[in-house]
Image (tube, rainbow, N blue to C red):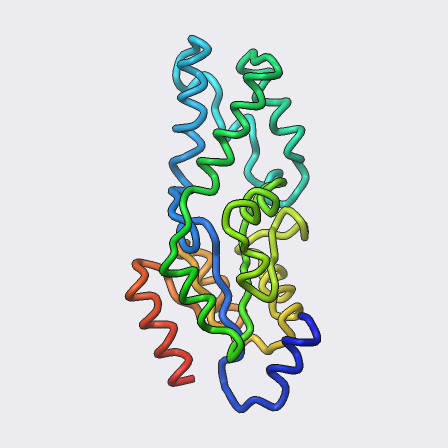
Length: 219
């Protein structure tokens, strides 16, 4: 956490000092479980291959991507080879992948996150792939939105590993019980709670804002 954030929070009597947001399905409108197959299916049809010929889960291990073991260049090379793409096609494939990966900004969640500062520190905690910081910053400017960003591929840890929650709390400089977390994945919400965080399962913007506000008020 920056010294500015630390100074802002020092001596505060608030029980909640930080709010942490997931990206996909929270700050972004995107279907994390659906877009990879849709994206790859489009390219299989273009290359006159049977849909399902390239199994995304098999050929691009999720664990390798989200923990940074597979680089963006390696991912591009792997799919280009499997599909038989030339250089221009590979470039277009990756551009379409990032469009699908990032989806569209949820402006209501973004505005809520922005409005929490300076009273509260804010952070992003996201399971991610190499290139995500560049693409999401270019589109949405997340580095200006929050105090801390933890991308799984950059730190070699991924939700629901307790270590990534501990790392985020340490970067924010707050205790676990002083954090509220918003995520659309039930397993990640439960993992955060097991680490001592307050956590809300995102099921709609209005509901999530209300639940977070109640936790801040009552904690």
